[in-house]
Image (cartoon, rainbow over all chains, first blue to last red):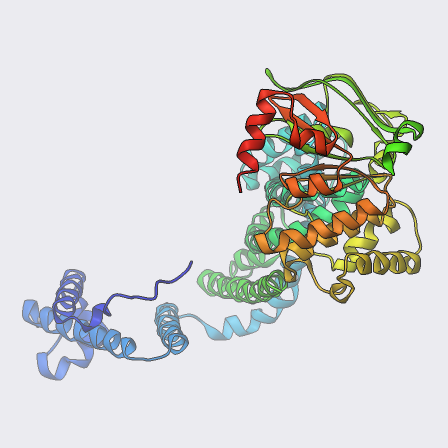
Length: 324
Length: 253
């Protein structure tokens, strides 16, 4: 997106807008009734027992919360630097989330006793299953993309049937079909290979379209220029077209990898000991479900954040190369 | 010089009764054209007259539906085995250069000789520098195409084609996409090439170039060759009304 050089006045500098925002927030708080919240407890000396304070107490608590929120927004709007503003908002949201989880009254001792196993067994399995799958999926995607652009009827038919089928079924069902279906034709397969096959086939189908779009976006002149020099198809593909489409293919492929990292949780249903499987099973015996689920959620989130960081680095590198 | 040689020299491109269709639309009809070694031909005509399509049929970037096209004695058809060999002997320069943007100027020039003609990197490098010298941009060898001006890019494209040691050079409106001040540097390069005896077919609107360099000027309209003559006769006493009208429109400036 290209930003305009002229921008509107900051909304939070307009008294009318602040008044409107305050009223809406106040109304929202009033409806959900915060008199039992921390704010209600803080105001106890002035209002008396929250349960006894009635509509008046409910209004005052809401008013205080709304005022606090709007003041916070105003304060943030005065931060001069864009990045600093972003960081402050992130930290505040993070604190809100953590206090939300904290309110579940989690057993941190239990989490501490299990987290090492979740990281070494769960994250490790999740990562290697996803990594192997994305590599196989990329290979399938190159072949699929070339087949889909081919004038050979067989190749096109097989490739389009494949993408249609694997994009048309839920991944969970594919996992079941491969794990439970292959033994029917006499080939018993372990959970991990079955999971990898399912993820590879499913993502290969999606990535076929990514690769095809990447290859198609290369100017026809590149084909003609190389043909006129006497290059054959494989030479043109390997040396001219693919090197130019890779920068276009990498960002969406990174996206697919992040999506796959989370979708790999589906192979937990066939008993692969990855993060999701551990999250569901570790807390079972002692009824610490919430602890394990939230821990796994945080671990997934951290993994994707790291991957997003890596992806944006790679993207920037390719952008630089294009603008040289 | 070409006057004496023309009859004795062998024919390198031979097009007979060639027709080309895009669906129902006939793009070229009954084209007959023989090009002899060393001959310089300029093809002109209004846009959509089939000039580009004609020269794209010569290295079979386009397919023809009937008649025959032969290059160096090899007839071009759908199931031929050695099209890459034929193409490597026919250089082509495009309106939009079609350089490879992910490779340096030098790599653009050495790719063909190394990958198609199995030349050693050292020899390919030497030859590329030799041709880059000839088009007067050896100092740009390690830059990327996007860093060069349009005129420079087109000269690289010419050098890249020459590195394949082609027997014929095809030019498809090589100056049409250039800023006006860059046209002459490309035309000068083409003139040098013509003087070195290269067989050339040029589709161009540069009538000055045609007058100076061509052995034969061909005028096309609506997919047909309307008139074909030596430049002096072509420009001073065109036979057909259509040619006269076209020239009056082009030569006003």
